[in-house]
Each structure stands twice: as C-alpha cells, then as structure tokens.
Length: 179
Image 1 (cartoon, rainbow, N blue to C red):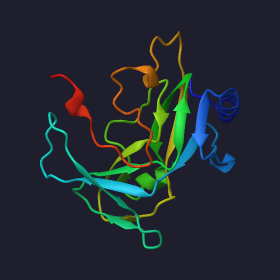
Image 2: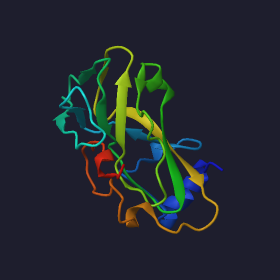
Image 3: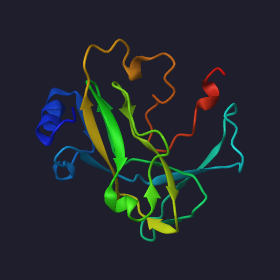
Image 4: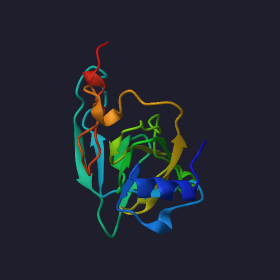
C-alpha cells in the first residue's frame, strides 16, 4: 500500500518519516518532491572495478549558470533533502518533467530500507546534453507500508555502507562486499 498525503503527514507527526528541509508545498497526493542538491560527482577512472574503491571528484553546481550534463557520463548527485524512514519503505522515482528532459535519476537504487537515514545519492545519466540547477525538483519519494516487524533497521546494521550523514554524493561501496 502506498501512503497518501494525509498518511505521510501523520507519519511525519509521529516521527516515523523525517524530511529536512520540509516544505508542505512539496507534498503531493501520494508522494513528496525532492530537489537536486548543490553537489555532483564523477568517477576519476574510465573503467570502474567492482572490487576496488573507485574514487570520485565532487564539484559544486554553479548557482546561476547551472551545469550541463553530458551523455555517456555517469554523474552522482544528491538530494537537497535529508530523510529518515522508521516504519515505511521509501522509493525514489524521477519526476515526469525530469524524464521528459531525458534525465534518469537512478540506475537501480530507487528503493530505500526501513531505517534509512540520509540524503539520497542519485545515479544520473542523460540522453542528450541538458543543463541542471541546484534546487530544481528532481524526484519524488513514495512511501510503502510494510507488513510485519522489522528485525534489523538499516541504520542499525553493522555492515550498512551508507549510514554516514552527508550532503555530497557517495560513490559505490561495492568493494566492501565479499565476492
């Protein structure tokens, strides 16, 4: 079941959903709009290695002129909003207006876990050149109710790789897995 606007508001009041900064105008019928943060990142190497710690270069999006994204480059972005979800599963989806510009905001990581507490790293790719701006609407969070008790919340997992609070994009931590 997807939470409606009234249910999202009730969960915010209970402290089960946290959104910072919060703006009531961003609450839709059954979602909450999130915005592109100030920072983007690109990987340093052309070939990425799943077993290695691939380094990124983080840069700030120029305030007035924005930044032109290029096809064929994976950009890591970040949401302006820090979120917490203590009783629901959050899903991040792109806004249709963003998709109509040829922007994908996530390659595979659209689902959060109960207990995820952080900003969202975006895996941005484009079909053609497009200029983006910090603060522009970029996606929407949809919250799903869960059935049953949660044994281990994400923010309490000993092996959770993305718990450190940040306002910058975070590179893949695949290299921390055993394989």
